[in-house]
Picture 1 (tube, protein in one colour):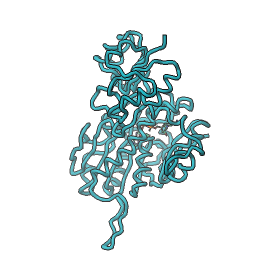
Picture 2: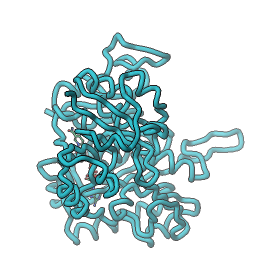
Picture 3: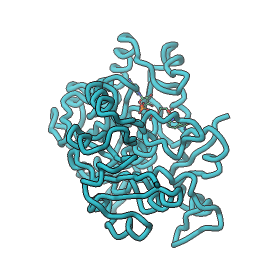
Picture 4: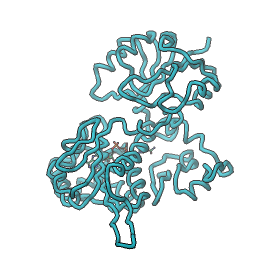
Length: 385
Ligand code: NAD
């Protein structure tokens, strides 16, 4: 008998994403799986039930969870949801495991086997399943869009007959996947962009995007990257030096976007109230780390707060503000079309990437370990040696 995959509607908060797309349903069907999608599961991602149905899914109800061998979710199931699953079922989701030991233990006692998508190794073979990168990339873009919406002036330099309005100054703190996308997006909007990170590798990536790199480059900075390419917690002494440099820089910025994270730890606090106070009236800050404790003092998770005269955006689930089925993102790199597959005005293959300066380099994805490399005006993936 075929294994049953169940895709429920997300219940936590206002999670608009869904764990499957019509394309992934098609793939699961071709693997011989029976797929049941809860009615309305894709609606907030703009995927009507009929789209899933057309590709072979059965539209069901929450009660179908009881028969599922595999449950595909965006978020870790709640206690109530878990009670509807059969013992022995596999649950695949982003589990947000750090600091949530009790919830993970509950899954174990319910007899579930959990796969945490965020713990997928970031290796070549697993790249198409790297949810951290795909979601951080979307969040970095959306952070700039959110900031531009709240910022009540123009981002690019505007030359009018009556005079020139200077370009907005945007400072991005943390130049990982989200930060690099934020830099690229702010540059595309015409802002003057600077960025900081504690990993020395970030310096070249920031410069390659046409942004200025701001950091205390001492001996500790030169050794601040783990073998896995992540930031190490920095000493109190380094943090004080970094804070002094940043304080001076922030006072001249219009928009600050923070994305700094250290895996498994609370986010480092990088922007103090005093720094916000030094910014010009009308300035805006976005804290993408707000769900992990926040990089900005006074940021309020889930709202836009006025902190010392700066509007600090603390939206939750920023990647979810862009409506996609997560499933369609997960399979994207492998399915990128070749050069001949252009479609629409811009096309979607290498030629389109050349023209628009956007998109992934599929060959680089296939060839080897890809690290992000962003070109002016766009995002490109390149192999590291
Ligand atoms: P992350 O989400 O863990 O952290 C975001 C950024 O915050 C990082 O760049 C980190 O260095 C920075 N940061 C931490 N503390 C800071 C501080 N005090 N001040 C300033 N910045 C601080 O990181 P991520 O976006 O997941 O990326 C981590 C690394 O993994 C990057 O080098 C990225 O390019 C790499 N990566 C590689 C692959 C791949 O090869 N397939 C895929 C994804 C990411």
